[in-house]
Amino acid sequence: MKIFPNPSRPSWLPDLDHRVWILAIGRLLSQMGSGFTLFYASIFFVNQVGLSATAVGVGLGSTAVSGIVGRLLAGVMIDSPRWGRRWTLIWALFVLAIAATILAITNNFPLFLAGNLLIGLGTGLYWPANETSVADLTTPEQRNEGYALTRLADTVGLGVGVMLGGLLISTTGAFRALFVIDAVSFLVFLGVVYVAIPETADFSQRPPSMWSGWVIGLRDRALLLFLLVNILFTTYIVQVQATLPLYLSNFVQGSASGKGFTSDTISILFSWHIFLGMVFQFPIVRWLRQWTRPGILLGSACLWSMGFVLTWVTGVTPRLALLSAVITLAVLGMAIVLYTPAASAYVVELAPDGLRGVYLSLNSLCWAIGFLIGPPLGGLAMDQPSPWADYFWLALATTTIPVILVLHWLDRTT
Image (cartoon, rainbow, N blue to C red; front, side, top):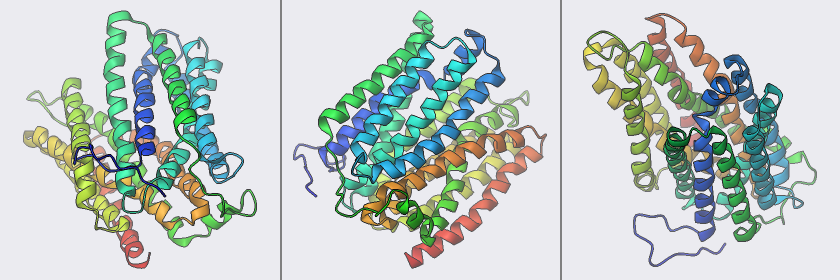
């Protein structure tokens, strides 16, 4: 594999194939479009279109179901010479552009449901194809940095999109324009892939039949053990994104009056959490370059455990709640920084050369499952009174024990 170093590249940037950078920049642009819509869709469809909150919840939840279907299809398409990485990416972006267009004209529940089902399908096709392309274009030594770059582009694009979307709404009130911009961003990324990203796969080794790759993957003991662990990791991420803000708002005594943190305080805390992830993503990946992937993930599991215990401390120590919350979100941010690049890189390490698409599709399925079970689990816990809602975080911390044991075993045997 030929790598294209850039002699003028700043030393703090990773030295990666230029096509990895193109994929990352395209992802940043498309995530800006997603950021326009992600945090404002519920408000628009409930308050302006007139759908019920339950209907909107059902529609948004449907993305997880179609996402599973998309990932199953991706595993077959990516490793097939008929489709490959490139055309799977192109079709994924086309489906996402159609989905955003449908949402832009939606005025009833059937259209809203159709748009969200297509979002799930497109996302399910996209992630395995993207991650397989990055694996093809990086050496084993570069792979953690390649995936770190992809995740960083996601985070920056989403953050910028949320800010610009809020600015557009506050100045124009044009909610539907957000979905149009989202569709355009996917089409721009599609054009970039079509023009600048040739097929990255070597199809000299491929499974003899369409579904045989899935059979091989599902018989891989190390992979199956890691997938069970990875479902828990993705469930943890959901708890940070969806459950922790509600806990800080409703259960943590963040003021003298005994009430929870204000929306402004929570926003600042999570901005701090995202900022740390952006700043430390590359330095930490480089610092841990000599560690094994299971060893890095084991470190992430320890940080998750510490972060969940600190969340409990935040809820039961009112006088230290704000300081504890700042430290908690820093620890959880570092747990995610360790987890995201190492997980994908480890799956590539386990995969036979001709089955990267299937293995990374199975890895991506963990995200779909985690985001399917995580929100109801967290919602159920937050419906309980104190101290049971507080104990939820200690229960999560205990679930890291089997994760640590499995990762220790994988570190010794793979």
